[in-house]
Length: 425
Image (cartoon, rainbow, N blue to C red):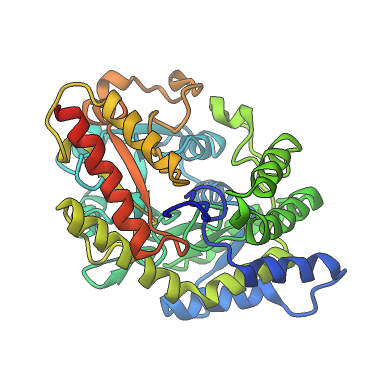
């Protein structure tokens, strides 16, 4: 029976396989990692993006720390404005505040969940100095238009590639279009070491490099507790969560939640919105874990695209061949025309949950959390009509990760169609 002996969740270590869990166990028993794992991770990215030796790569504890380093090292005038989109994570506007700048929140368009480029120039002022372009779910915005606007207004282009390692636009990979880019290796990303992030500088500038290195050296080492939780959680995810539908799996998951062994995605202070910076460096042990994920990157990439294509074909929705599809987004407006989607939304989530499938809910709130104080970002939801509409329980995310097989994908579609039919009766 579908889902009976599987635990499918796009947020709890969806990439972790038995070899990752076994590796984490061995790392946990070792006092020292003898190989230079962080340098090997950097070399992987240099090879992937065909970077020259003058291009810099820094590894951090998270994508948000990487983004902060980029913004802080730009050394922009005080109170410079940075364009960001709604329908994102609170750590993005937080990083802008932490670097001493003003986030300017822009509306999205409902097809790719990226910036509405037809409205973007209304947000640009003489104080606009940088633009963080997020490739939501791995679907890239029209980067030719983005580059044209940046060149016209002399804006620094920063790519947020937390969702999009492996995506391309016009044959050029995400992360290579801007002056700089950041990546995340969080627990629910394309590749994961539970914690982790990276900065890549594509257009070397000696003064910028000096400032970036200076800011990086200020970071404290990764907390041992974070490192330990990452390794333990990887072990549990690989060995225990597959037993979720037996009593032992559910008990262990409940226990690790109560004991807070599951690393928090962010603190309550970050959730509210803050200019306080929490960043740290990466570690050799987590880099060693990440290297194993990077070895499987191509397998993961092909698999995600294959599963996304099934969803696209079965639901008759647009497919973006160049997208990496961290998740496959479904705007319920595409499936049914009605005013209130709450009942349909809840029904789809509930039906899938009964089958052991937990669908993603990016996003129900502008920056992922209802507790976030939007006034800290000088933002009003009323000024973002498309984002406001889509946040009203209209977008679900279908899992594409390695543990979702073809049969799972077809059955998820069946549950969606059953919920649609029930709404029509």
